[in-house]
Amino acid sequence: MINIENLRLSIEGKQILKGVDMHLRPGDTYGLLGPNGAGKSTTIFALLGLRVFESGRIGVLGGNPADDAVSIRRSVGVMPEKAGFYDWMTAPDYLKWYGRLYDFAPTEKDVAKMLEKVGLGAEAHRPIGTYSRGMKQRLAVARALTPHPKLLILDEPTNGLDPKGRREIHDLLVEFASDGKAGVLLCTHLLDDVDRLCNRIGIIDNGRTRLEGSIADLLAEQGGGQQYRLRLETEPDTGNLPAGMTVLGHEGGWWRVQVQVKPSEGPSPLWGELWRRGWKILEIRSEASSMEELYMSHTGQELHQTQEVA
Ligand SMILES: Nc1ncnc2c1ncn2[C@@H]1O[C@H](COP(=O)(O)OP(=O)(O)OP(=O)(O)O)[C@@H](O)[C@H]1O
Image (cartoon, rainbow, N blue to C red; front, side, top):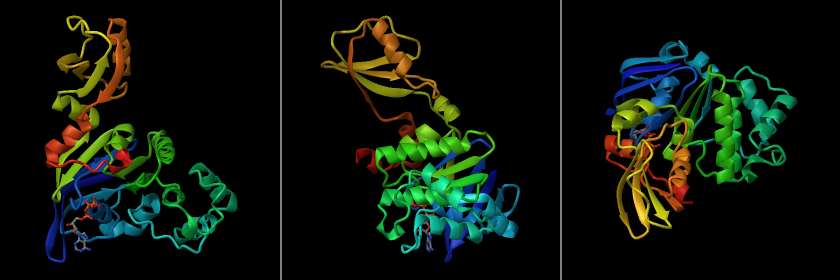
């Protein structure tokens, strides 16, 4: 659905993209990661035909944004970083107006269904200017979904949402990608979103793709696994550990362990297994995630998990 090879692009004489690659297939939810200013939004602008690039190749849904920008934009649902709504409009009026811009005329019923889907049903008839940030995020997702796109491109879609709102957006994206034919490109700083939603990632730093591939493969290549601290009631039997687990050390009642888990399963089965082997676990805390280590080892920077802290 997206094929970018060695993309190079300058803005006002400054080289911004110096070699970006991206490969997104049907069924993929692709996390595009990188520090502030790395070139993520510029890459998105280029693949929508909104920025002219100097060299490299971009294919989007079989077309080339240099020649087919309008038809590409009609088949792609975009949620940009800045929503740019008209504050005096209500959500239904806005979605109808937006649909018409793309030669897609949603009916009252279509619009009501879409707003219900993103959790804006009851309050949608107020002017958008009175919406909370979370409501605007939901409306932005509804707008991206309105033309029934094959490909969704979302820039920080859960930014500013409370945990319930975030979960709802996650569920919508999972539903969108579930038929295996659609694709999602998710640009985010929230590794938790990537962990939950994505099967592939690309990490961009300073205008270059530093790493790209399936998360399962990249984590397996990285090795190391995930680290946890477990608070235990009594000293455990460390001579009888389940496969995939290593004890790294202990201090007081806390034991540091490293576990290799299947991304599809998570560590939960392992905790049950430990309990059966006599480990009286009182508390479990996750240390730096493998995804965070992967990210840091390819950018030398930490992501700002502000939403997690909030
Ligand atoms: N219109 C512009 N004029 C000049 N420089 C620009 C322009 N747009 C982007 N840049 C520069 O290009 C670089 C990449 O910006 P871009 O917005 O693509 O980064 P990003 O990875 O999306 O960052 P963030 O995570 O902060 O959104 C930055 O150094 C930015 O200052």
